[in-house]
Length: 196
Image 1 (spheres, rainbow, N blue to C red):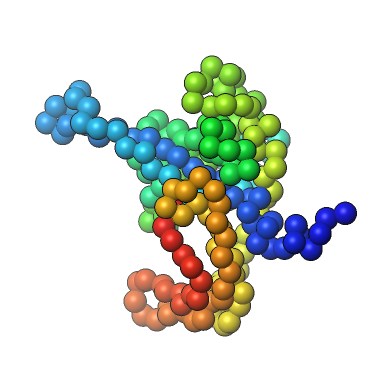
Image 2: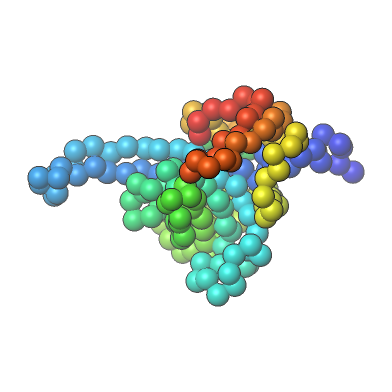
């Protein structure tokens, strides 16, 4: 029987969170065949169910892949739209590969698909095991499909801040929302929040 701690929203959220890592290369604009440098970027992604996306989308394949939501700015420079995904509970060397399958850059939104039956995984030197093994502990998180209320409500923040290899969680509340006539929408939060 599971304890109340194991069923807490914060603990459940930690099991739906993975770290995403991408590498990018920067070419010389004057000589595009010359590589200037390579960068590594990391961020957080959340596992979500297939029910939220159009059934006819070619990347929406229940039983064949897992879907994760991340921010576009994390994956925008990914070479060949490829990325690596890992859970904190399996250690720093436990990665599987995924691909950016859908994005809306103006909303800073992207979807990563991890293929469960990929033959590429066996020959990829940057992954350590099959996705069925490494991502078996992940849980789908429910998405809020209604507008966020401007009233006081408890929230949880879970992720890999500053590229740390372990997940961190904090809790707090939404204190208010400014969604006036300006193009930007702001929330007032009273929790610890870091990039990543």
